[in-house]
Image 1 (cartoon, rainbow, N blue to C red):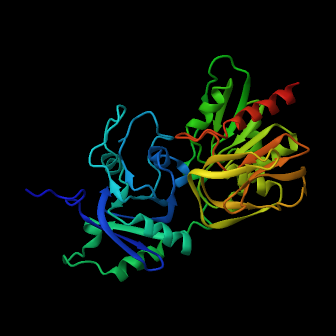
Image 2 (image 1 turned 180 degrees about the horizontal axis):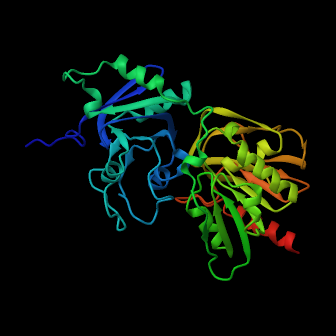
Image 3 (image 1 turned 60 degrees about the horizontal axis):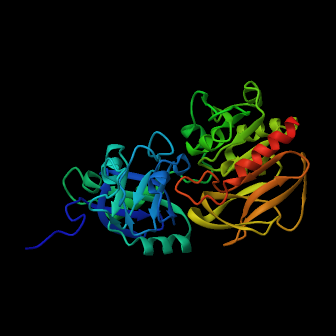
Length: 387
């Protein structure tokens, strides 16, 4: 008796990088074609949170962990109402999920949401290639996307041409595409202590929940919110969220943040919000070679020397000096946190106003929770302002 290898009955699929490297495998999720920026995530767990993180909009995510889909999909862990990744790349998809909360397979979820993926790929070789060459445009093709109208196989050269026609991430203005279109409120859990205006640049569901746990009523506003919109809710504090795209294009959020800094309201930003704060202070931003993505990134708090293991998802960074305090239009600013892998700026702190930001994710659904104290720091700033 013979048995088929996992994925043997799936349609053939091809992954084509913009530099011409090709990986062949089998379709996973939806069948068709998709394009985006090829990036890799080093998390061993939390794939459902990764898939539903709006920051991954227009990115094709390569999972470095070899086995994906083992715990299936549930309805409690999504960070938003849909899967946002443009495509998904795994080595060994689970044959059958095994978890008491699982309600369907990951394969079925991807197919239902039209997310084209590929399995059976040597993801270690692909990740090494991206580390050496950098994040780049990619296409995944399966089914009719690999066949001409005459029934012949589409040439690899034609597939590569399609990939090179896809838009690049540099210069992409994407936050408004993923943010809420209308404001909504997440009520405080228990006694209400503060009101926070949260500008949604691609916010994850766990972020307002972490604030609500601390007695904060969160008014989530669209990415297009102005300073006037922010102050219309009477906030004790203002928050700028994570999100996708190139921060160099985010002029409107930068203007809104400058309006908040001028008033001196306690301010907290994460990820894209950190880059927005950097720009608001007059620093530049730049694209990283392959970015930081996953839930095992070491970051050092420069004030205490403490090292936190943190969750990341960013391809751009703030260009701020590490060796000195900087003078800005809003007072003195310093780099508060750095990544120990490459010394990239991971946090900013104003010394003369109640404002700070970090490049990583303290809400960290799927963990780790080393940085959860940052929400408490935000509360402390609001308490100080009220006093």
